[in-house]
Image 1 (cartoon, rainbow, N blue to C red):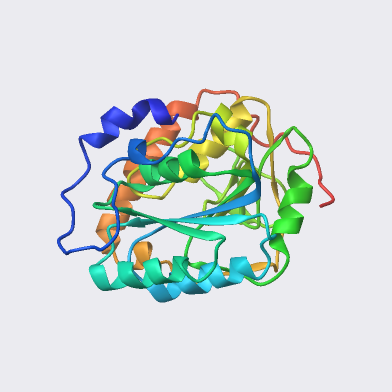
Image 2: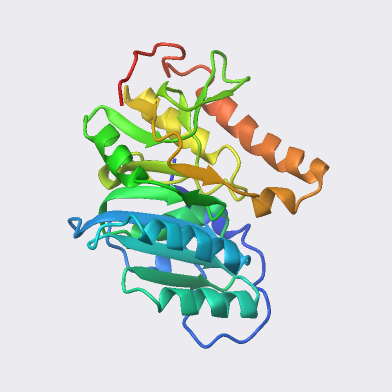
Length: 276
């Protein structure tokens, strides 16, 4: 998994969207200052990759800021939004010192975009958040409590269980095989130890399952926790695609996950109750 696949992904990066921008842009995750070797200096890093829909971004970020500690940070990677949308996201980042926006001159893809934010993250805890999600309560406290055991790799309000790596069902409490990437929390050191995000996943679907199974392969636990402390709104990247294109992109990513993990000892069904 992860950062060693940057060169493979670079060949698939499309041309940048047109338009003049009054702020610096990057063309690769490698252009982001690399803090992965530094000790954490923040409690939380909340990381969002976004493209257009600034109202959704503002809703998600505002909900986070209501619950984020003073020493937390929000990192936004704008994946080449239209100029007007990018300008609003740039302005949003200027409204609170805890928020920083990074702008790419093209769509880097979900895996590479997440790695760009991982390079910049300074938090001891990370929350991978989608702009469709709105925090409605003290979710960060619940996630931090769930992540205190060193055996727990990931936590989040929407988990997945499966017995065969083919059929997945959503659950909101207890041990799970995967945490959905809409809202996926971890210690920073965990994601770094797993090698970051697989940059072959340009489309977001099933990247969360790949990362989750990599953790389970190492004998780590994943727990669904925080039900009722966040809500999901319309997912723009999903709704914008025709059904056939959704299926094609999702299938490509799922086939990659299945080939990688179907013979691996990921302890399917071997769960113990949690009381978080």
